[in-house]
Image (tube, rainbow, N blue to C red; front, side, top):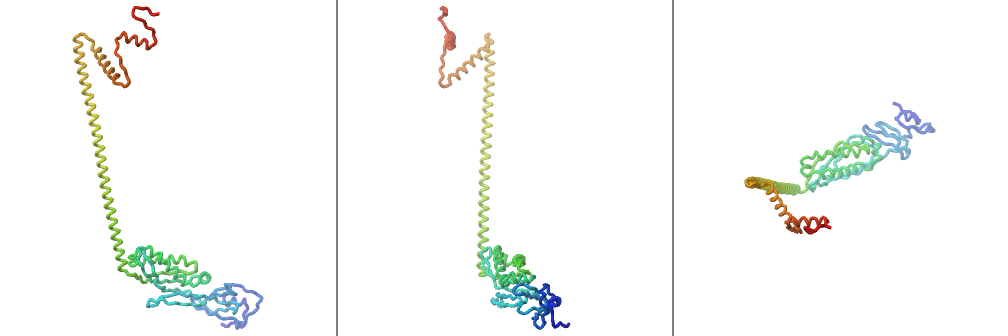
Length: 342
């Protein structure tokens, strides 16, 4: 394909696939005065015009205006772990943005488990830039930001697990992938996976011994609590049974007392009935009225009750005197026997 020697802005746009229209007062720009930018496959370059975003160069040969259009550069500085486990500083300065998957082996992170065990976790993180423009203008030193976020999330997740869970089931830390991805998507970066390669426990024997002692103490506390509970239950049941027996005994006593009183009253009534029958039979044999006897008996009983009342004075008077006293109490004039009443 032959390139034209002189390229107007309109034809230049159609040739390189520009998506923006430029000023039409420039009629022609010679190709010799343009800078050529070659972009490889699965790479992207952001071009700014006078410090403002212009467009993104696609794979192939692209032309930009020198001094006016410049590629956007970025600078990364972060630490990675080599084969011997030593951290090395990596510096990267470029204007080419890779669209491929990248993996970074970050240095070991010190975490503390839920049972206060100190661990070192060696984790790797794989990520991919899905929006180059958003990544460039939203982040500064992207790998360092990912490292700090991974460190914080590792501490949060490890702090909610026991040391044996972290060592035996390292897959429980895979939840970090979704947690980090939710945060990095607003930067135009997608986290593909987070894997824990190695778990190192400082003084693991002492940590496991402390955990074993803690488990034994917990079991001892549980057993003591169960024994105390069982003792309290037995004592409560004993008190309840004693109170039940006592209440049943009191009720039975009241029933027996009531039955005895009823039997005594019945026997007294039967005895009185038999005595009344005998008295009536004897009075009838002498021609006397038995009812007079019964009335006299009731009169004496009532008189006895009256005499038993407090602050009570009883005077026994003949019938005639009693009538005079009654008349005086009623306010009637009385006279001696044989004298007229005036």
